[in-house]
Amino acid sequence: MVKVKLKKKGEEAEAATPSGEGKEVLDMVSGLNKMLKKVESIKGVDFEFDEIILEGVIPPYELLSKLLSGAVSAPAAAVAEEAAAPPKKKIKLEAFKLTPPVETHPGKFAEVTIGATKDEGGTRAFSLKIGGNNTSPYYRFEGNLPHRPPIAHLVFDEDPGLSKVLKEQYGDVVGDPVAWAKKLVDVYGARVIELDLNSTDPKGTNRSAEEAAQTLKDVLAAVDVPIGIVLRSGNMAKDVEVIEACAKAAKGENIFICSTSLVLPTWVGVELDDEVLQYYEIAKEYGHTIISYQPMNAQGLAWLNKTALTGKEIPLSKVMTDPGWVCVGFGSELVVTTMDTVDNKALIGDENFQPPMITAPCNAWLNRETWFALDEWGSEVERGMAFESATAASALVSGAHMLVMLDQRAIEMTEALLDKIYISKLEDVRSVMRHLPMNDCKKCGYDSCKAMAEALLKGETEVEKCEQMTPAGIRSLKRLLNPEGVKTDPAEIENWIVEV
Ligand code: SF4
Image (cartoon, rainbow, N blue to C red; front, side, top):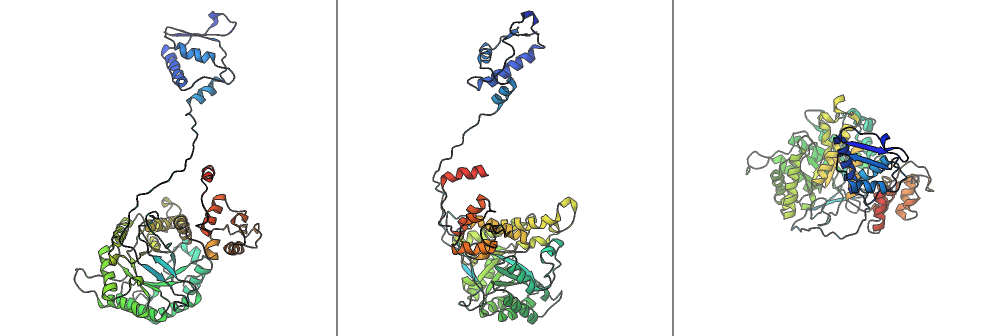
């Protein structure tokens, strides 16, 4: 039995209160001891008793002495809490120089131009370059990643059976590819269009090659951005017929052409079908950029590229590679592996792997999980967007040089991701507007965010004049307007951490 007596000042010792079991007291004293070992002294303790008597134990005299000699002002519970809390550390940030391990590669991806301006023989307002990198994606410290991957916005020439969610974005233009393309450029700021000539499928509407060519001409007349076409009928003969009519109709525009109906012979060494050879011949004759498509088959892609480059003597600057893409969660790791192979082989110096890669994260929408309304699967409004944007991010990590996408929300998220990686200078009004709040509040002194964007590009105002942006948003836009001119002040980093 252990007794504890607490005696208040002025009271008789006999009035002291005995404790309960000795083990409880020992635990208590031992706990106190542990706590107090971590502190130099105790302050702010308000003891009601000036004497503690422990009987039957060896008391921690030193501990109790410290306890009783402390200044008294705060309640004991507060002191115990303070003593139990981990000591607060002051974080001091120090600048240091990081020297990353740098590798160099003997090869690089080809630089390919899509679209053609008047000076280049076409009618586009601008052309875009892709590829040209001599290092893997995101390895900016190691080499050159000269071109930000553009996103081609997809247009269908007939209703492909869009989901309810996508109809909210395109319901007013579905079935009218010209209006659809105009909406993408004028409303959503698309800088590249891919026209899916779905209606030419012989198993479907089976529109003629001439009708498809007319649709392409109409879209080219309606918008001034670079354009590509894609055919997926599975019928190579029909695809080639349509491609020839379209290539002729778009002569000089340097469109990019993709047929997913390309089939390789089962056995290596067997000749390719005539239609496959015609596919490359047509592109060469009309000066367009041709895409070698072979899903998840690096060697097949190399075979097709060799056919184009060596067999048909198409310049490397006119060929792209499509390794296929499937949605994350549905086997996308197979495409990632294929793209890794292409990336490594290209950088080693194998020309047949050096055409830049285009992939289509919009294929995520082919999975019912993206659009099917089932409560257990979560919000159908968010699901498709999440699948498509995650698929796009995977494709970029794997080295994609260009993406084809559908959902505008997924596109916006992907552009935001690209903003963080490719700090390329913003040079057009649409790109600057994407970084402004777009609520036209006029507090910056301009009538609209668009007018503010124009003034920023001309250097007539400063980003800080927008009263609706966060400090992080202002920093980001300043950097994008002048990537070389904005240097990070180390002292500022502490403020960023506070903001976060
Ligand atoms: S203050 Fe900002 S949000 Fe308002 S109009 Fe100007 S740029 Fe747009």
